[in-house]
Length: 500
Image (cartoon, rainbow, N blue to C red; front, top):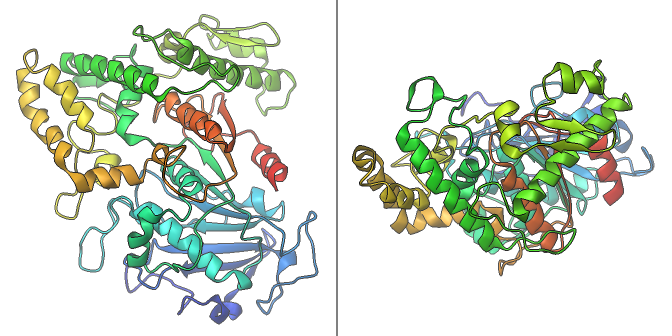
């Protein structure tokens, strides 16, 4: 990897790469690809980015064309899309035009400059075989890349005060973190070690956040609250056929109850009526539950209205969708508003549980999250001490499982270094707190209604916290979309137009 990785730049100065720009006829853009964004790269294959510039803003000689425009933008005013390719907290390369996970086309055809960025991840190893991509390396790489871009801004078309971050899944978490941790001092030492340009900024103007897998300290709890009624899972569990063991069922109940306490202590504010959102002891009551259901109902209503107006590519009618697909038992439609009978009916009839209990900090330490919080000496680690507390409550009822799991979970209670690294990549620690960051002005959150990678309440909580902190936040659940860049065609472009 270290000898065969293609790297276009020999220095950190893009002035040396003017002759390396190529033109792509299909996408009508200038391309500068495989750019190393740090001189201290330990995994060059992943610590690279590529830059794609619509034709009008550049000339063949690599000089910026100051005179031409596209859709009203000039090389000085056009926004810059910075899309990270992070997934599963793994190491990921940047994308290439027409390749997997590449969404460049919709941005380039609007005239936006598009930058795609790779990063280290939990399995990354340096030339000596040492792990080098554990948290917060993923985020530090993206911040380093932003500083590299600004260091070379005189060579790249685009308004560097209008950088819009985009990402989904773990990349959605990274896009969120870029929005709320701009220039935060907690990352100074990591950035210095990574060879970042410390005189530059890593703040972004806005963030598009798709299906964020974040707030990992409470994600296990939130998952059990959402999927409490479902005792099976698609991903497999300790018991055969993905069915919960009695121990997992008991653990699920305790994690669900712990989530109710956590959620209520957040004292989230309903932006519509300013009420404090709460969940009651009953898993399916409280105005916090009602707020989530209102967002799901809104999601279904938007979808059915679009279906009725023939705005979707689907060939079936609304009646076909509800009746033929056997949704009438849990979904109703009066022509204006959709109503889901209950969250449990939706879960059990439409979007079943994907992950076992526990879902993120897993019992056998095999999840991507267990791996990203590992260390070079101990690559897979537990990170959530609340699970230890829940297992402790089950000591007498399940002595074998207590003996199998408690000690390893309990170890993290006194691990200050681990606690710091977990803290660093939770965006909730930076929103409306004493942490000083240059935060984005705008955030847009889109989550698929068929996404079972994490609980709906994770993104809902994020949206409410952002709104409460004064960041203009556009949040919706998108019906029938899975864990993906969940969106309706053209709507992210409409949002960008509205904020720039």
